[in-house]
Length: 343
Ligand SMILES: Nc1ncnc2c1ncn2[C@@H]1O[C@H](COP(=O)(O)OP(=O)(O)OP(=O)(O)O)[C@@H](O)[C@H]1O
Ligand SMILES: [Mg+2]
Image 1 (tube, helix red, strand yellow):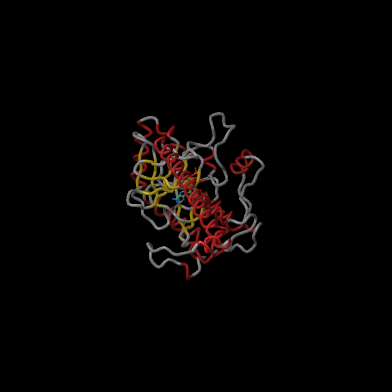
Image 2 (spheres, rainbow, N blue to C red):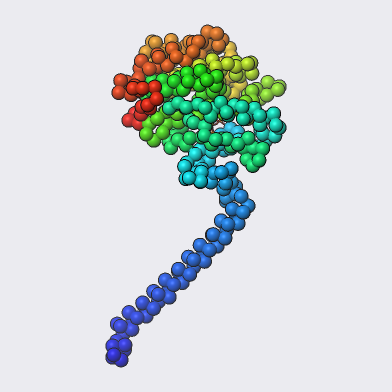
């Protein structure tokens, strides 16, 4: 036995084993200490109500999981309710909810928005007017990307893809307009494509007027937001109706089928001036393969005077639908149809 212990090989082995145990123990000790410190830090941040990047942990009855994005006037978080169901939580800046009048308007708009149920409209599930705690709008979470991420620069998308997007967006408009809801901000950033290829329009019926007031400021020299997809009447802050959405879907069709915006400019002012004083160039100047019927529709949609645009979304949808490949046509009004294979 003694002889065995005296064997340098055995001794070395024991020493290594002891070192490994001690070293390992020390590593575990350090890891545990680090974990404990982290837990302490997390607890502290939880009591403070914010995480490291300053975002809240809990909003109403939702646990915030991560930030999905920041828009012009709001932040959007991925959050979960007590049952673990995921929602997209839009939190507009509380400064827009200061008076009872604002909160009443918000509740009225959202109570209509919440009734909307359509496969191409992101559902509103719940909301809070900010009287107690933070104001928020809990929406259906779309696991996917916004359309702007799918748009190549200076190149059109395929006609199939354009037709699917445009027919789905016009189906959403048709449904919403029949319920008396105008979108007012149709643009690629407000159109989502889910992982399984569904097309969904976000931000319908969310009392946009509260945090997105008329864009031109009092002196007419400054302008809030991007003017590309807005109708001329929206820019000049005239009263708008549902036909403002037709102008925007016209711009969207132009962008999808040419790769360009109808009015480009170095500055916002240049874009605005062109938009209110000129008609867009024919889309075929950029893409000669555009079917004539679609070129005519775009021209009609982008008329400066709302009276000269189509009278409802139904004929718009019907024309776009003609160009949707057979395999992607919806069989019933309710069942979705995927565009996933187009990517
Ligand atoms: N229902 C949703 N599901 C998943 N992600 C969403 C949802 N709604 C919004 N998002 C994400 O949050 C981001 C910010 O949305 P938000 O509507 O605030 O910004 P925006 O559309 O770019 O600007 P704005 O609406 O203020 O003009 C979006 O770009 C999108 O990535
Ligand atoms: Mg949006």
